[in-house]
Length: 313
Image 1 (cartoon, rainbow, N blue to C red):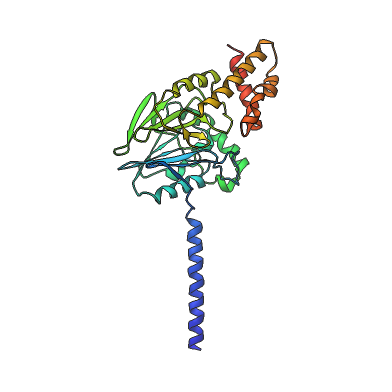
Image 2 (tube, rainbow, N blue to C red; image 1 turned 120 degrees about the vertical axis):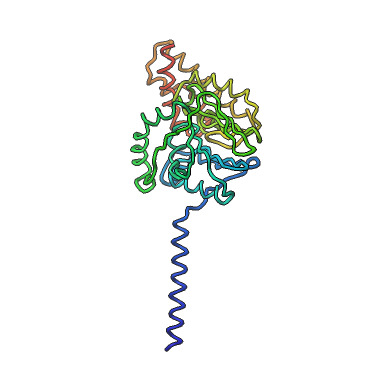
């Protein structure tokens, strides 16, 4: 009898160990897959897709930069879960403090993971216009994506505004690694920020640069075309676009410029002949359809935004 009780006790103990291990595994998020695109520069390339519960909202590129004394995160992803997975990826590679979380702009796929990094003295950094943009749209984003992605995935998502604001150019030192942050005039949005790592010549361009994924216009078409000219002069060797593969610089600007110029030309022709905005939504930029993913999801909105700007030229 004593032997039978002992065997039973061992079996129960084994089950408890398995259950505890399973619970711990579920509690600790699986790390986000990242690639080291240059020494100390890690990037997760998001899915070219709309944000959904199935993809955790992980559609934008996010990454981190490790210096000798600290880490900077560049964008935090489209959900708290993605932010937690990004944090797990950082912690498997370094225990250095995360000193900065840098937002390239304020769209949900780039900022919804911010709460994973709140606390411990981490400074959130953004364009000088970003707090105003988040105050105006933040609650709308939360409500809209709660409907799209569901309560479970949106639980814990908070819009965390930056406290260190960039108006022009500032430099952040991670310890023998200097990042140059630059705010841009209205282009993709009115709060676009780039991050340039001087050591590796890597440019985190945010949504000022799209590759494969159709560019999304939420600011000024004319402004964006002007910004592209300035961007092309930056001394980068590679770019991490907001969406699409990490690429040699300035290659991705060619297709993006062509799309935006085509959109502008088509809309100007429609405005000149007195066509309504609905005509722009239906036809402007149509020749670009085969060249871009998610064209039908965004082009009509781009065209109406462009029409509203160009009709007042």
